Length: 296
Image (cartoon, rainbow, N blue to C red; front, side, top):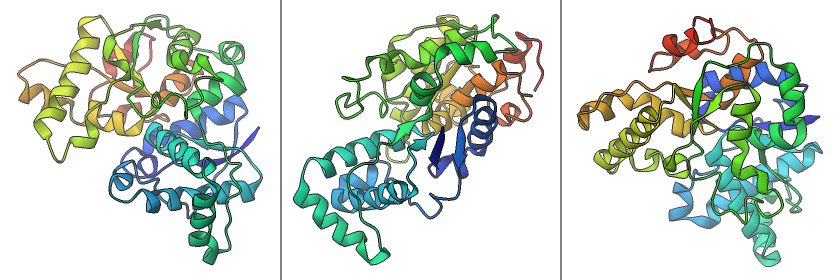
């Protein structure tokens, strides 16, 4: 199936390895990504803009939805924050015809109109619902049998569950666990997997944010996880990029590799770790990869 690809801004800036890994696994799994039709699409506002000006945030997302509608293709994102923000915006736009009309007036100077038919979906859900666990299992070349991996959803892709389609797709609540098992790894469950990573407050309350990073990573570490996997690049930025600082500020020893979702899938599909850019993380992945006789 072909998708209008909306990577979000972080995957094209601070986490380029996520973008590359997505392209790699998509070609193997038969996911065709149109990288041109969404060029010029803006940031979703990350929920931060919406706190100050919800109408502006919804207008930006309506513009993106209109671009996807014009392509005639379903829309795919690789950012959990984008997914959550877009799903909430879409719910507001489709729930109030007068509001949608007003927002359409805002985007009309670009020749755009949003009809309310866009359905942005995360790669996580597309792997589960469109590709299917059985196909992924059939394409595994390097089972991750020696790895224990803790899922970390973060907050934006799990709540509010109603606008994220959990009523119609209850399996989304266990999507990461399903995929971890599909690639041969052992799931390490832990209570913080659906909590905030701390990224949204990093600049306004660094102490609290670093406590959250330390808590999540040490919890996973103490439960025996070799790594954590997340579908959110902002969670990756905080849990990986700020892990050394969190360890220092909280006087704890942490050495927890954080994988992007398509990197975990890519390893199992036999993609070279260097191509997946796993060696570009802040936290070393050498010990992790040695468990499947791979080196970064």
